[in-house]
Image (cartoon, rainbow, N blue to C red; front, side, top):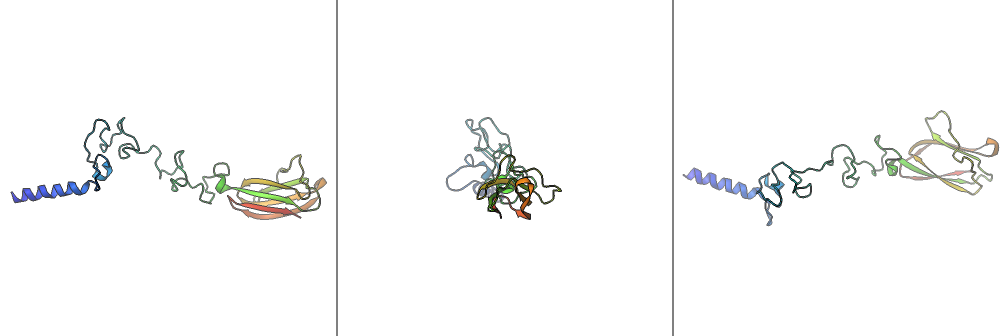
Length: 191
């Protein structure tokens, strides 16, 4: 009989310590009760590992986990860098392999302010990746950059070469192997 009473007291103490303190009950916080809950017809049975129609992720996350939980390796539409840095690297100042200038401009896009101080009109302006074999298309197109004029360019972070040419394509100025970090602004002055 003494063993039975001790067993009953031990089980009762275990039940008391499993439920939250501070006036809440297992119905209010089923995850803190080890999954033991009391059925409630108006709220379903939270803790039974079945997401009832009366339960939601907010009211019973143990039964109704988020569809796209943080930590699944994908930055889902309901996540941000602030709410789930494990999945959403965008905003951390590093252009990850899964990010691009269009998907994460704050990490992968850079801004370059070009200022013409050459004393002549710039007719052709080029910016190309350090790894490219040709300088690519003229950024100005049909426009020009007057002496004292400015233009702002945006593009992906990385290593860039620049060249400015005057009328007829005569060389004015160039700058090579410029490492441009994402989320930063740079100034390139053409002399």
